Amino acid sequence: MASLITLRFYVHIADLWVVLSAAGSAVIVLALGLRRWLDSGAQHERAGWTARGLSGEAVLMRTAEMAVTVVAATPSANAPEAPRFEGGGGRSGGGGASADF
Image 1 (cartoon, rainbow, N blue to C red):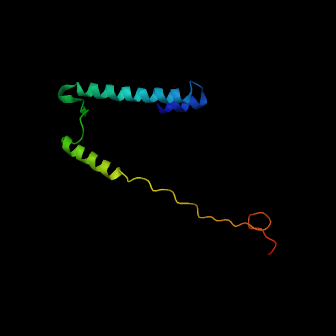
Image 2 (tube, rainbow, N blue to C red):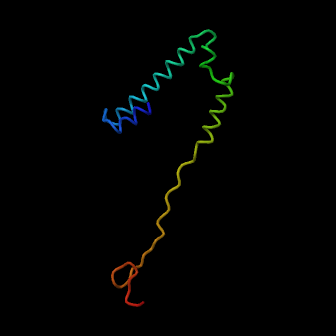
Image 3 (cartoon, rainbow, N blue to C red):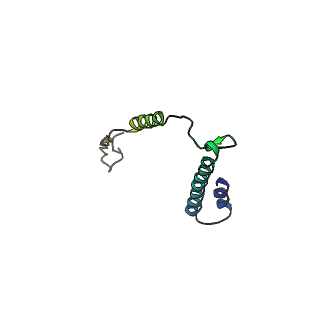
């Protein structure tokens, strides 16, 4: 998929958004197909490859997901501070210029 996207910069295949959308869709379809193929094998594996998760307990995985969600949750954003610059300008019209050096 990365080669197809790189090729798009040298040869105009289609608009970039079309190439990226097609590549993303192809990767998703490929992953779902691979998972289904692995899961349909004997004992949910083929040639030692499996579609099952590394941890056998789904409860631990859900607990970890909840912990990450709680840590990632942030309070509401602070209001931006008012600008502190207070330019007085000079007699010549601004920028700090004046008749006195």
